[in-house]
Structure formats: C-alpha cells, structure tokens
Amino acid sequence: MRPRLTKRRALKSHAPHDSHDESWLVSYADMMTLLFGFFVILYSFSTIDDKKYERMSDEIASAFKSTEKSDIDKVQTDDLGEDVRKIRALRMVVSMLNLGGTQEEAVAKIEKAYAKKEVSKSIEDLSQTLNDTGAGAGVSKSTQKAYVDIIISENALFQKGGYEVDASAIPYIKALAADITTSADVGEVIVSGHTDSVAPSAGSLYKNNFVLSSLRAGMVADVLIRFGVDPHKIKVAGMGDLEPLMPEHDGKGNAIPANMAKNRRVQVTIKRLATP
Image (tube, rainbow, N blue to C red; front, top):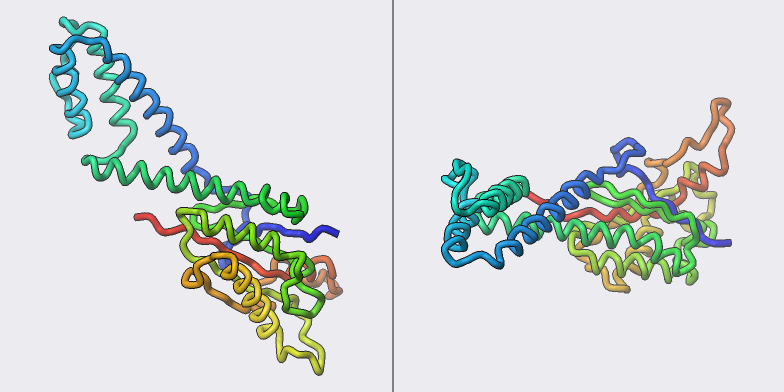
C-alpha cells in the first residue's frame, strides 16, 4: 500500500481554512505584464532620430525619479506626434509598477518578487516530486503566505509504535530535503511529532507520548539533515497529543480509529524568510 501524505491547512494556533493566500501571484503577474509593455514601448523608440531620442530619454529618466507632471504631460500636439503618447504610456507603466523612488528600491522589489515566484514554484513542484518517488496520490498543495505545512502520516514513516524511519520513506524525505535546499526563500524548518491520545502501554519503551513524538520528529529531522538541509534552520518539537488534526471521539465518547490514525503524524513546517 502506498504511504499517505497530506498537507495541513494551518499552523498550530491558526484555524484551518480553505482559502489560499496567493495574492502575490496576481501582483507578480501584473508586474510582468507591465514590464513587457515597458520594453515594447522602449523597442518602438529604436527608429527615432537623435533629437527626439534626447527629449524622450529625459522624460524616461524623469519617470523613474518622480511622479510629478512634466512638460510632456502638458503637450497636446507637437513635432513628436505619436511619440508623445508612447512617453506618456511609459510614465504610466512606471507609475503602475510602484517600484519605489530610487533605482535601489526598484531593484530590491523586483528581486523579492522573483524570489517569491521561485520558492512557490519549488513548493508547488513538491507534490509531483513526491509522487515520482512513489509517495502516492495523497499529496495536496496548501501554500500559505508565510509557510507551507506538510504532514506525513505515521504509517508512511514508522512501524507501529516505533520511531526508526522506514527505508521505504527515505526517497520522499530526500525529495523534500532537495526542495528545501534549493528554495531561495526558505527560513526556518520546524519538524514536529504528534501522537493520538492513547498513552503508551505499561512496559513500553516510551514513558509518555511526548517522548515518542520527540523521537519520531528527531529521526525525520536527522534524515533531512543527512540530505543537505542546514541543521541551523531546523527545530524539532515533540507535541504528544496536544495538537490533534481531528476529533478522536464521537458525541457518545466512542473512539474514531480513522481520526486517531490521522493525528499520528510528523509535520514539517517550512517557513518563508520574512520580508520587510
């Protein structure tokens, strides 16, 4: 049977929700469209004479320096003709890009937008990567603005009651490590272990569920580090049964085995680097 992986929709105190914060995608797409228009306009200037070029160069420079109206905004008709409209369009594009008041600010904003695109592409590709390694079709995509939360079920990683990572789980943990190490915008990586509410039996190797969940999280973190994840970025936590994904009992107090199985998991939370 293929191991099952799912993704959690919220981190710890955040309530689960179905919406995805992908608003940056819209702004990035808008910026790319505007930049394309910007270069089309620049290309259209390639055949103008030196005098017109000098005038339009001044206007292009002023477009990046200020949003104040210049003489070109006041021109109705003159020797520039159609070129006046092109310059005005260029100024509009620069204004709509909202790249800041200096070249340094403009460069920084473009770099940040590109970095966000790259890390999100990497995270989006993770589902396909895991499927390619045989992790199964149970991988869902849930990317939040500040993090991505990946949940790996107990039976995908360990023998029942054990904490050693199964050899069958190594390929997709390796794939996850590769995505983490190649993403430009990854900050902290939190590996947390979770159990159901059933206490370890008498004579068990584990005094309580905190011990078991900590050992499991630590073993997964060890595999991630082995395949290149920076250990300085990793934090390990054993949560025991404090953060269940699903209720384990129905209204009559009867146990719900399927829900208990979902609560037994290791969670890998990949946080994005904070941006000012």
